[in-house]
Length: 549
Image (cartoon, rainbow, N blue to C red):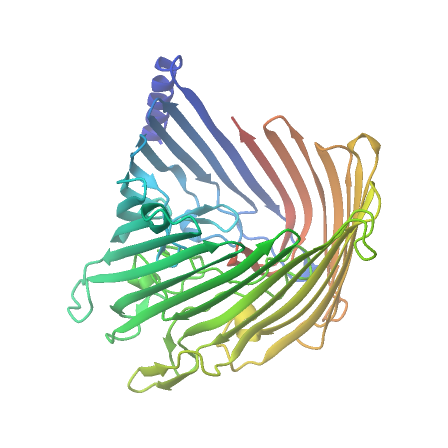
């Protein structure tokens, strides 16, 4: 602990000396739980009944330089569902020094980066998911010309309060073909990426020490049309499961992403196709498949609609890029698509009404790759698309309408099918499906003085898993700064007819926000931006504090 306070004091001293020429910024966030025994959901509090995740970020900018650090404390343990690697941790987690001019951007220390869509490389932080896979090393971005920029990275990936065994290096190039060739009719951009991992073979000379991935992409905008394609390939590598190498056999990997859309006033259509084969890429080969998303080099979100309601978030999709060749489970990756449609009925028309009506529809379908497996020889061959097992199918439609200056409503319907292995865990394609339909009615009434009342009624119909659910939310805002709510998800069709009730509120003033909640957490997948983590059922009081400065 002594060196932590030393670094902090040194940082503050530098800030004080240079206060006249620079500026200081940062923030503090604290998320805490006090867990309570609850016989209704068979939850017994663990040894550490109180748990807390805390983040203090300090930054200072002076001219072309910026320096900063992030101090984290998980005391006495991290929140439920987070990796135990954080339990009891209390230290400076990241730090950096950055220099930035018009053409050169250099960072030493910890940094975040993304190449292309992130399928080949993305490092980022998401505190709700417990992810921070920043690279510790050097990042250089150079604007070579007005049409070409280059980025190079080198370092080791953060893993808790340490770094990965593997060393990551990468280069990314972006070229604006339209400006280079003075093409005004179309915006055309090219990109190329390389990412490599070096990790010692140890005593096993049959496995590669270096595994490289190479990718290229093309994006365009032409009038109201836009689109892009990205293709990536990865060198042969071993596969691992639960921290152990499955064998010394090597398998390459591929990724293909295609996007096409059209947009004009009142209308938008977007379709995305993606195929992933053996597309797991970690900074440590033995980290493959870990449930905490630790040491992930790339970003593979589920490409489905991100739902907003209690019951539409029960049966969600988690991307399935892994290769598994076992007697109990065979997978080669995933292939699928999603399409979004947005349409606005104009104001003053018969259907649009006085204030207009917004309609959004989404369709998503994802399947496992159609592959032939030879388990004794650990061999497989996958078709490009084929007719692999359906993993997820979702159709939803949402209608938003303002009826008066004070009242607006949202109507949502969802029809979803998900493989039990995806949502409940275990092998996919063999346990059967869960089929569910969800209806949601939401209304918001705005009162004078900034007050508002929001009510949501929801119902889920299903003959599988925990069967039928009903849910409701009532939220009242006294102002834009103060609000309270009560919510309940009632699994009346399941065993025990369990209520997952919650009540709480939040208060904001200036740059400070405080939140408090009491209730039950339904166990299952929690997803943010298409990336998911598992949360066990629990009951307790939670508190949240966010301060920015």
